[in-house]
Amino acid sequence: MDALYFFVLAAVIASFGISIALRSSMEKLVLEPETLPQIQSKFFISVAIIEVLPIILIVLGFIGLMDSTASAFIPLVIVGATVLINFIINLMKKSALESQAPDLKEKLMTFFLMGNVLMTALPIVAVVATFIR
Image 1: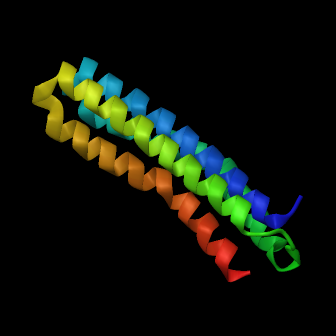
Image 2 (image 1 turned 45 degrees about the horizontal axis):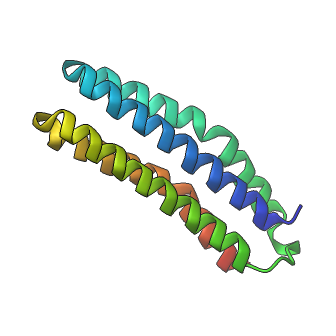
């Protein structure tokens, strides 16, 4: 497998995994708003667990990056599409939850922004790695 696809796989796993954890945490927040600190702690722990495999894939990608011969177009499209799809799904979920609990709008927005920043971290690494080879 070409090294660029290690980066793509890492980005897809991290993006979808963190996005699922984010949506689950936002749902828990709406159900039990008084447990926000515990929900945030569990969210960060799950993000750390989710990122273990993608970080290993990133390391493998960097190891074989100089021998990479694949075109960068397809990996970039896959990474971009993955991030965009997850962002849209997260946005739709946040909007639906805000309509259920309008009093939690600020907390949901904070959670949404925090989760999307974490969701895009490894895809950004994948894009940068694609351009440095």
